[in-house]
Image (cartoon, rainbow, N blue to C red; front, side, top):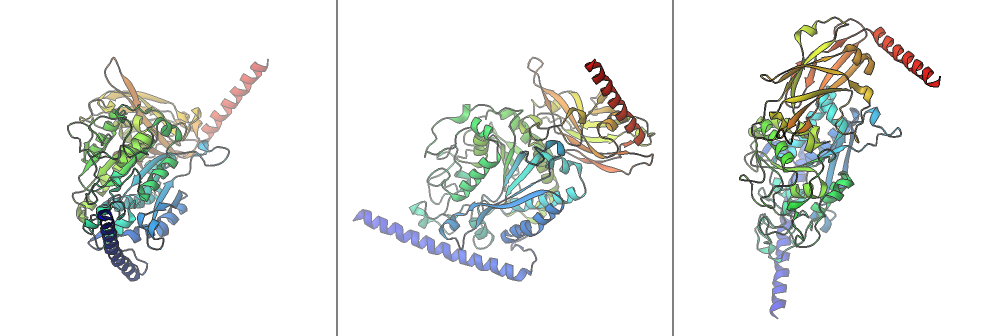
Length: 588
């Protein structure tokens, strides 16, 4: 009888919680309908923060504005349904889809296979609104993608470059059920709305029941240090790893975009209630072949958190993770808090640990702002530096564990003497390397730069993604390295450029290589590429100026070359005659 009474009490409690939820849901639906009815096609904002598009407007902007504009700019873009929210699994009429936006550029001709554009690119995977009450993250990514369209339209070489080798994946609302409530009737809701997983949910306040989706990922799930079995705790982990349909959608999607060989090298996805092994001694991912970056954007704190999070121990790729996040720290001034004295605290079943351990992605949780409902002025003031951080991650995505340890090119400029050079002269570029990062004792940015290389048309950052044939490489000659102002002078032969590509508008990509480690165990890393517009003209009319874009700053660079088209023809004929002579000798 006692068990029956307890069961009856539990059922009554769940019914009560369900009624409370349905009441809140109906109120939220009325708010959304009112907003749609008043908008007349205009986008609406969260009521208390007019700088943030609300849930419906963000999705409508993606579908109605971003996708058509991206297609018009010849970008490859999709907006797909990858799963259902918890509420939709219970009620197909009232729940929400989990949707993902993907965008990339068309691969360069040398990257096509059998005439099709089917080369797999490195993923930059972004998730926002895992926690419903954090208003700013979806808006930050939406603004960045809007900025991306503007930069592509203006032929910004930086954006054109990383869109060749990186594909952006964005899930704007991992927790749509919770988000709708947080924007309307429950502004402090953190978790999803699953009221069935624990009988004690009926005892929670209106915004406290549910599962914390950032404690439900199937890696090191179920630890009491960093998650909770309590129904009303902010860190409720659910009853099994990946029990929530929202996390199942994210996990399945991640498995579809990160290379299978990385997943095979990584740790198994957890399926049992308790971790079966200690993952602290997991094998290190190969720095030269592992691809992809994952960022889970949250607010607030102005910090970057990186693995391991479930325990205060270093991950196998700690040096690269540490280096990349401290370079982001240089861009935004947000503090990198990984394993060690500044460890942020245990988090069991968190997104960044999962993506690193099982998918091989360079992963972090990015907390920005100073409140869950960040004030509009503070959000606007931080937009530019946050854009630069996202740009940096997009650029290193093809080889994140390697490129982050190489030197960063701050700017590329044409020397004043060459701005008025005759058409038949070579050109000298001055390349400035980013200032040393004192917080990274192992970083190659603290060491001498040992080599510079340049490529035409597209960067050589990952041979499987964008192979560059030898005839695309421009011969370079380093004149001197000035340690005081960290600059190189590099001479490019006009004939080398003509022979590689001929007259026309091109893009020049430049990389620097630096050393890291002690003299006895020295390693060398190429850094991210800097993209420079380059014009080779067939007449003696000076070219107009253009922007040269690097990973940290944007400076003005002059158009670099003038030439005579006849010279290109001469060199082409010369090499054909030489080839004919070699074949004749070979046959003889």
